[in-house]
Image (tube, rainbow, N blue to C red; front, side):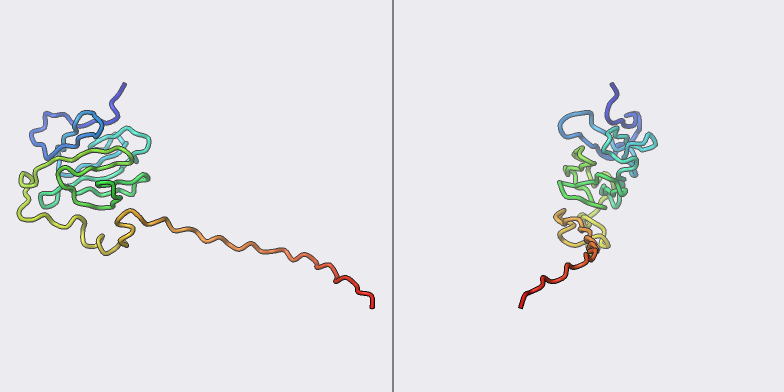
Amino acid sequence: MTEPYEHQSLAASENFGTLVPKGGGDPIPLLKKNLLIGRRESCDIVLRFKNVSAHHCQLSVRGGYWYVKDMKSLNGVKVNDVSITDRRLQSGDTLTIAKHSYRIYYVPADLGAVGPPPPDAPPEEIFGDSLLKRAGLEQPARRKRKKRKSIDQPKSPPPETNS
């Protein structure tokens, strides 16, 4: 039986952090500063689950912090149970890819972080979405139903009255 996910060999000289599957499984070392996660064999981290998209999300280091970006996946990405499109990850955060959850662990100073952490999301995303959407509470827009055209039935003549 093959593992549901694979990762690169531990022979690499640097480790930029670790993804630890919640519920058990082997930790996945983060061996590069840009990692593509998905179901395709060409991904840096391959997750062999039917509900994971071919190119599901991307992890990248910016300013000493890991960020995750949803690559328009079908089943989405969440950080600490909140749906996201692009978000900074704190060490210890829960990253959910489709329905598969992992904890990320890393040391920002080891990745070049200096000073206080930057905002969780890039400024354009903060102002681009409603608060309800950012909180994962927005309902999908409903499509308006088209009114059915009624077929005019010939009206029956009014009843005759006897006078």
